[in-house]
Amino acid sequence: MEHWERLKPGGYCFVYDDELFPPGTDTFALSSLPKLRPGLRTVDLGCGTGLLGLLLMQRQPGLRVTGVDIQPQAIRLAERAAEENGLGGQMTFYAADLREVKTLFPTGSFDLAVCNPPYYPPRSGALAPSDTRRTARAEVACTLEDVCHAAAYLLRWGGRLCLVHKPERLTDLLEAMRSGAMEPKRLRFVQVRADRAPSLVLAEGCRGGKPGLTVEAPLILQYPDGSPTAELDAIYFRQQEDLP
Image 1 (tube, rainbow, N blue to C red):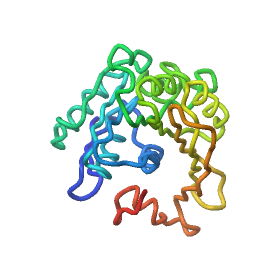
Image 2: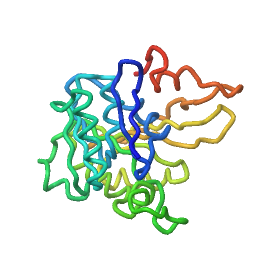
Image 3: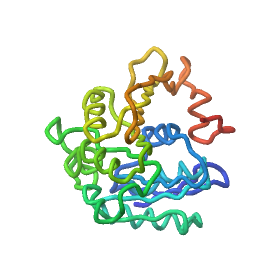
C-alpha cells in the first residue's frame, strides 16, 4: 500500500510503500550531514523511493539529484514523487545496480554522493522474508566496499561521500572507505539521549582527501524527558531550520 506525506506544510511530498523498506530516522539524520550549496551535482546510491534526495532538496532547492536503485518498483515511485513535486527537471532516476555505474556515467560526474546502505552482512542473522526488504537491510545485492568504490568512480577529485551506518560496523566502514579511495574526514554519532550509547553513525569521506578525521559533537535526538531536541525538530522541518 502506498503512503504519501509532506516533509512540512507546503513542502515537498514523498511516497513509500509497505512492500518496500519504510523511511526511518537514519535517512532524516543523514540528510543533515552534507554541506550543501546551489548547483551541487548529487547522486543517491540505493535511493529507494527518493526520500533522501527530497530531504536534501528541501534544504537546498538548487541541487540536481540523480538516484540509482536496483529495485524498479522503488524507482517508479521515486519518479512519481519527482513529478508530483514539479522536480522532473532536477531529479533523474535509474533502475540499475550501483556496482555497474561505469556503464551509466563518466567518472567524476558528481560532487556529492549519499547513501543509506544495507547494514548487515547476509549471514549475521535472520533475513527479511521479502526480496525488497532483504535487499534494503542486508548486504545481499551490494556491500560497503561496493558503495565506496562506486562513489569513488562517480565523484570528482575532492568530491564527498556521506552515509549512515551502525556503530558496531564502524571499523568495517572506515576500512571500506579507505580501500575505495574515500578518505574518512568527518564522523558524527547519533544518540537517542545523551546518556545512551550511539545507535547510528554518520560518516563523510573525501575522494583523494588527506588523512585527518574530525569527530563532531553527537546528534542527540531526545531530551531527558523524551521530547525531541531542537536539532531533531529542525531535521524533521518542525521548526525553522538551523543546520550547516
